[in-house]
Image 1 (cartoon, rainbow, N blue to C red):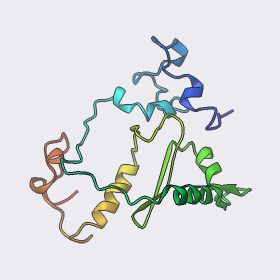
Image 2 (cartoon, rainbow, N blue to C red):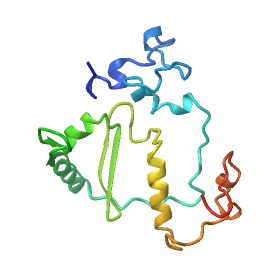
Image 3 (tube, rainbow, N blue to C red):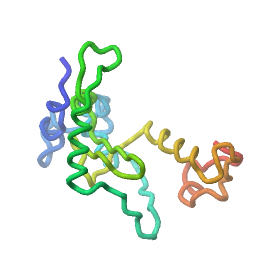
Image 4 (cartoon, helix red, strand yellow):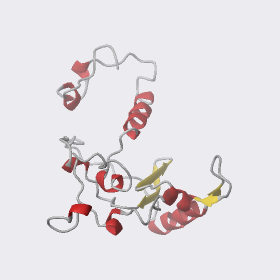
Length: 179
């Protein structure tokens, strides 16, 4: 029987706690089940401990602060969003947005509307300052950014020579003439 999101929370499961962790709570990249539920929920928050990764700097300029809602409005909006109900495709019963996040084992959710952060929630091992593997979401984010670049969606792709330095010098630099 599958575990519910609350039951599979890495802290509840006790993954990788203590030193050394007990053998039944140890997760290693060489294990065939490190990316299977329920271990997956711990693994996506600790991917940098498994695989070589590279942090990409945002640059040296000061960050542009998000245009967040005031705290009271943010809290009200979050409660309203959590209370939204819908019937899932092929579902038999309506559920709230908050229930859907738990049902889908969501670790984090951010909603930006008209340039404002209007909703932000964290579950499982993810925290506001944490890192989390986003895997296929990378393609969605990159595609959206490319679609809205100043030159327009049909503009010719930039060559590797004009790509950001971290891409041009990576193991898989962009190919000339596009993707």
